[in-house]
Image 1 (cartoon, rainbow, N blue to C red):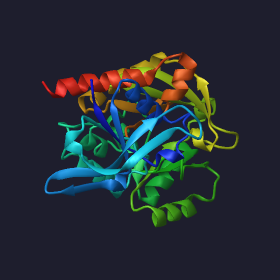
Image 2 (cartoon, rainbow, N blue to C red):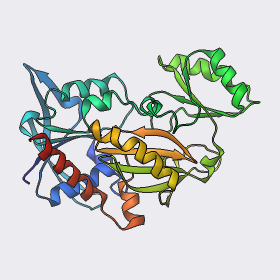
Image 3 (tube, helix red, strand yellow):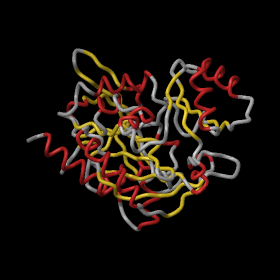
Length: 317
């Protein structure tokens, strides 16, 4: 298939080619003969019903320090490309939401991955609440009395900004910690949204498992171990990746949520599981392909493009 693919992502010069999932997706697309373009989210424009982007032709290669070549800027009509990969990193703020509204003007004639309306409707810490039997006890509120009562019930708790990313702003507060009120005041000053409160899960010391699903099907997992003195296992803040497999509980979780992901056009998702609990469903810019590839000897980006091609054919009847 001679696809034209536009990748909406962060500056390509800043990525780590040894860990970035967007990079290997681009490599695989190039291997298949697709024509690639790169643009930043701020390069989108909507006028007279047409969505365009100031983009640059892209070539990629697995060479550190020389991993890309960009052509001169040109304005491309996104209705004239086959696939848009929406791969910019969160935070999930109004700028991010606005890009989903703009890309809805071309989807599904141009297949946007993931479906922009469904990305907007599935913020990662809220989407998971549609599956209450899979997640730990959870409170989402700005009410300090409710949060205080939640801590009194569960003793150890974790506070998270509702639309945060990468582990930023995540705090572990035990029953004797005097900083709860100060933290809530800080959250109130920084974020207009409620916070998410959950019991601290000690199983996190054994790892926060990232499971990749392609079109609703689980295809691999890694276990991310938090660094000493931290409850966050995100790789960019010192988390360590280990080989992992899917437990019976993991498969139960994936079987429960997989049909909903497929139905919503969420082709590339990454879920987080701590112990027996689903904690997040990542739909904006999931990562983990390269780590799973190395541990399992697979090529998940090829499976991803197979799924995208199949969805592209299906949307054209």
